[in-house]
Image (cartoon, rainbow, N blue to C red; front, side, top):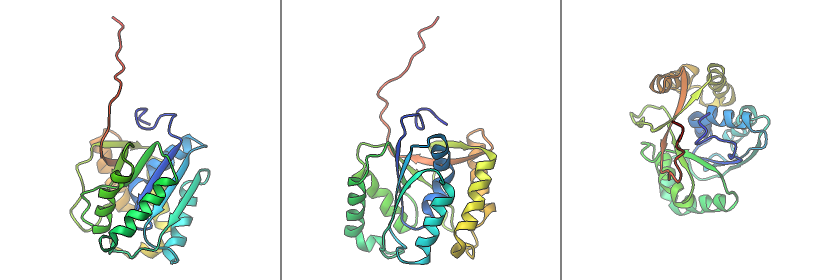
Length: 221
């Protein structure tokens, strides 16, 4: 793992999604690596839609499958899917309440230029609540031609990439009828990002902002 981002000081992560499955599609393998390397990591997760439906059941099962040893604190809210911009105030309140409940070392959510209106709203609001945090924006491949030009890559081992793709199909049966929701799609995007980062597979993110407070210099001759 990149020690600048995923060092031993990562003890708490906040992850946010508009819909059940967004978080694990965008960052499932990265989160699994962090959780696998640190048994004491806490994953605070907020999903804005799906409460009280089969989607919430799928989401809880997926988080248990991806992170069997981690301390996962998952909240699924019941805002309307596809209409989050109409409920700006409620989204802002949910994010503010979530923020009060955690002090993460890393925040991961949708990237702000996602064409889906629910994703895009969250991508813009997350930095307003997590103002002094490292925020990474994940990508979700779908029908819209909106993949970003990533600025941060996390290499993913072969088996971890295949595990992610396999678990996504197993854990979200309600989504397998979608023409883009399959193992080939998930592995294909990770393979492209791997090519771009000189690895076999990778997950890629848009870096919201980073402050470089110290540069280590080698003073040896």
